[in-house]
Image (cartoon, rainbow, N blue to C red; front, side):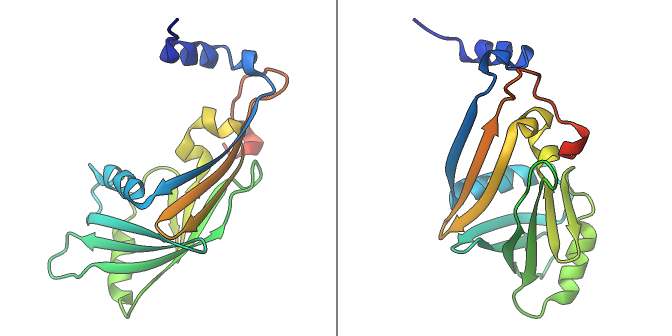
Length: 182
């Protein structure tokens, strides 16, 4: 017996997941440094930002060291320390907030870099020394509506996502509502 998984998922989506009403799933997903960097490289493809490459290095204690290589001539790679400042709270405050700072005296370059990053994707915002990720915008309305909790933590060389998803008991379609940050 073979199950056509894409067809099954399409059916579940079209039915508003009513056949799975009341389901809850908790997961702990360790993400390697190499996968993080692959995702970052894919996100940079087609970008007009002056960034040639990003190397994300998770460190223990909810922090990262990020090395940014710019396309500007004679500019050395920038080392940025990033810490998780605030975890998302669903549905009231569904944003993951990072605080960043540069290693060394590179404030002028940092301000030029930040000024050039005004073309960030939807759901990503720079606010001074904070990087704000709007989870519902980044995940899309359907997955975001199922998110009950999400936490990002780090170990050396790994980011760890702890998340919980749920489908309403009533079997109503899982959609983002105004109070969920849409």
